[in-house]
Length: 326
Ligand SMILES: Cc1cc2nc3c(=O)[nH]c(=O)nc-3n(C[C@H](O)[C@H](O)[C@H](O)COP(=O)(O)O)c2cc1C
Image 1 (cartoon, rainbow, N blue to C red):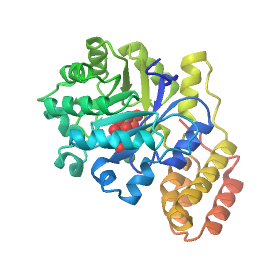
Image 2 (image 1 turned 30 degrees about the horizontal axis):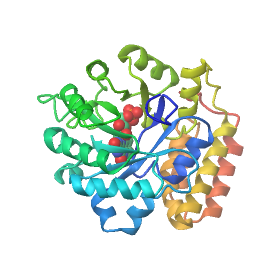
Image 3 (image 1 turned 30 degrees about the vertical axis):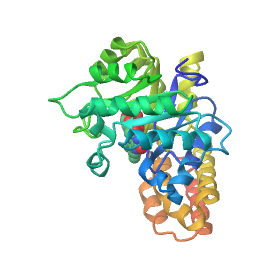
Image 4 (image 1 turned 90 degrees about the vertical axis):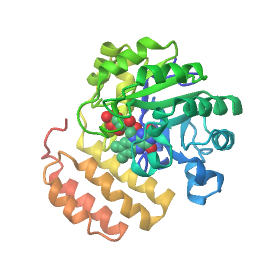
C-alpha cells in the first residue's frame, strides 16, 4: 500500500485545468486508481477566492481524492492543509515540481527544489497541521547542472513525507525529451518510504516496464489519460490481475465523450462547458478517421445542442471506419 487507504499502485496525475471534478468522476467511473486534484493555490485559498475554494472542495466525491497544494509559505501551507482536510481531502500532495514561470516566480513548485530548507519547513508544517497522508511531487532537479532529486527525496522523507512522486525531468526540461527513469530508480533506492514514478507512461505495458525497471511502488499517469480516462483503471487491472486491456471500441469513445460533456455542463454550466469540451473532444478523437475535419467543425460550434448533433453525426458517419488507436 502506498499510504493509508490508497489501495492502488496507479495514480491519475494532477493536471491543472484538467483533473477537475468532471474528469475525476469519469476516471473513477472506470474503476480503481488513485485520483489527484488540480493544484490548489494556497495564497488564493487563504483569501477565500471563490474559484479556488470550489476547486479545493471535494466533499461530494465518494472516493479518496488527493488534493494538491501549491505555494511557498509554511504557515499558509499548514492553514490550507487544515482547510482542505475539512473540505474532504483524503490526502495532501505538495507541489514541488511545477515548472510554470508564474509559479516558480512565486517561490513555489519546482523553485522549492532550489531551497531544500524551505521545502523541509513546508512539509513539517503540513504534517503537524493534519493527520492525513502527505506526499511530495517533485522533479529530477532544477536543471541538468543541479540534479538533486536523490538528496531532495531524503530531505522530504526526513521531514515527514509519507510517500513521494518523482517526475523524471528537470524544471528546465518542462515536458520535452524523455523522462529519466534512472533518476526515478535512484530515488527509490535512496529512501524507505514508498515512491511513485512518473513520466511518459502511455500504456499498461509501459507502466509495468517502469515498475520493473525502477522498482517503484506505484506509477502516475498524466497526458496519456487525456481522451483515455479508462487507462487508469486498465493499468490497475493489468498490474494487479494481469488483465489485458480490451480494445477501445468506438462506442466507448463516443459514450465517454458525451458523458464528459454532460459532467462539464453540470459543474461549469453550459457556456463554459462548451468552451472546455473543445480540448477534450480533440483528445477523444485523436487517431479517429476524419478527426481533423470534425475538430474544425466542433471548435466553431456555439451551442450544446449543435455540439451533440455534430458528435452524433461524426460517429454515425465514421463509426465503423476508424484507425486503430495506440
Ligand atoms: C496540462 C498539464 C497540467 C499539469 N498540471 C500539473 C499540476 O497542477 N501539478 C503537478 O504536480 N503537475 C502537473 N502537471 C504534470 C503532470 O502531473 C505530470 O507530472 C507530467 O505530465 C508527466 O507525466 P506524463 O508523462 O504521464 O504526462 C501537468 C501536466 C500537464 C500536461
